[in-house]
Length: 380
Image (tube, rainbow, N blue to C red):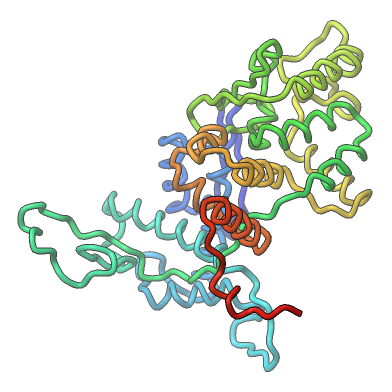
């Protein structure tokens, strides 16, 4: 089996499908992917679903299972199959590391559940017990006014691994400076500075047009477009404005003058980040070109940076400097403030120590009382 990239006829749009061992598309997956296309899911999202469902079909094939006759038991065994690094039937007597993390398994299982949800709604398959219904999560009884509010049962998934809490990794200012110093091109320096200072996603950066940058107002408009020639996607469907420093705009002007216009001449591009030295000159910069850049920087600096790390670093810096959460949410383009809080609001030991010392200073300034322990301290 394989995941196949497909170009839609009479269009520049790209989609994905899963081919079986007979090299024909697997029909249930193809129908589900067509549904995702109709609700305008991005090609990157569809590709992820395709890879997840390919794994599921490989499990079904290896286990001689009919996809329409599975139960919770088979799905639980599929989760174990995803985690096991050993072939089926082979046991290890020593401790081994799971092949996939808990979060990855949960994401794959979500794709499988969505596949069954779709085919259940279309009548293709009968009810598959993937969920349990609860009046309220965590409650086994109806509330006193249930008959008035007409509360509907809430479905929760039966199968889900407990995920350990992971906080997003960040880059220190020294690491960011080291990465920028090791860039040979002004374009690459500007890209890293933009990602770090604005917190925009790499897809949003690669989709930027010159008309989106208002240098006189130090403003960048993030405009979602689904027709970018390089396949870049903004993820969000709503526009967002991000204010930046005049120094970043100065670097943008330097990039335009010394590299962009110098190389392209009269054959200019609407895209901000374009290929200027290798391959097709003037074509929009792609995801793979960005990853090549960060791989080169890793070999030079030893810093394993990825574009999204700059977004994490920017958000963490804003919160630690005391910016209100609503402003951080708006700047990052999150639809819900809870997403911002769950992702970025965390404290380490240094944060906890700093907050306690500030509390002590405020307490000492507002009262003459001393700590209870003072009465029990003896002079040395």
